Length: 117
Image 1 (cartoon, rainbow, N blue to C red):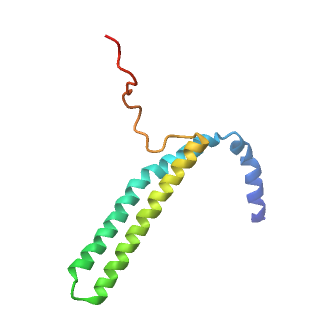
Image 2 (spheres, rainbow, N blue to C red):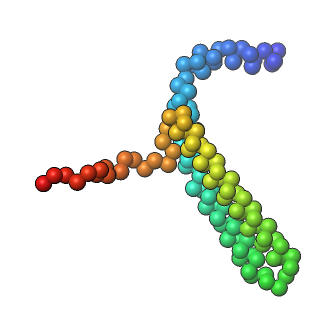
Image 3 (cartoon, rainbow, N blue to C red):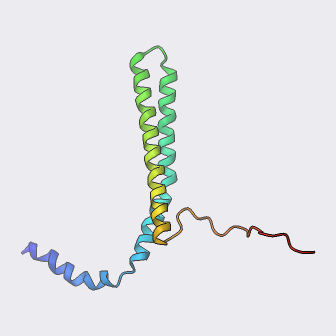
């Protein structure tokens, strides 16, 4: 009996999904991701500096130095992955012409020629 609910609900909700504006859903996902990127970058930087502090602070202990190195490496790997994904999303967004990732609005116009007096 319960196995019948999923196909019936899917069939009943399909018109809602068919009329959904797919680009608004994509823009919502992109804006959500864009809002989270600075938080993830900050976390990766904190992890990296935590590894540096552990590496320098425990200069005499070989195990703590190795732990510090591992933490620094994982911080850098995390930072690389986050920035790479951010760039990939920006590239796909430009290619598909959807949304404006990281846009801060239109800036002032840059003059291309000197006006005649």
